Amino acid sequence: MSNRTQNPSTNLPAVLCFEGAELKIIDRDGLPWITSGDLGRALGYKRCGNQVASIYRQHAHEFCGAMTTTIALRDFGVDTALKGVGVDFNADSAQRGNPNVPVRIFSPRGAHLIAMFARTAKATAFRRWVLD
Image (cartoon, rainbow, N blue to C red):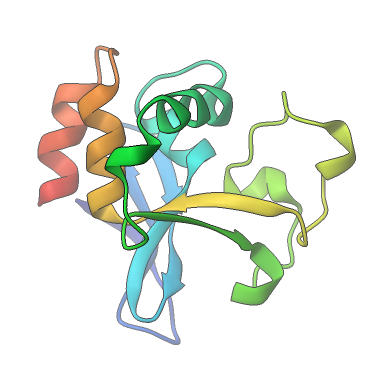
């Protein structure tokens, strides 16, 4: 994994990069989590968050609470527009820029499971990368 910047309040990086895709880290109890939009971009999907959401819905029974959840980004100190944290704007336009809208996030284990179901050219490399 390639760290771009360090989050000054934790030992976690603020951003990781995978093959040119930036994954902004959300620190949740000292563990790194990423949004569905960032995950979708890293996997090479065009409709990032929507396609990850579809994979999640099809396989929700395989995920546990330690792998995915929804959060309001404001609760984690993220007050910027949602576009900056990986939310797919093909979703309801009323959600744009509102940090109170629930956003699905994934732990490394959850991201790996999404990548197990992904059928993109980048999925194999992503699975290896996220385990490291």
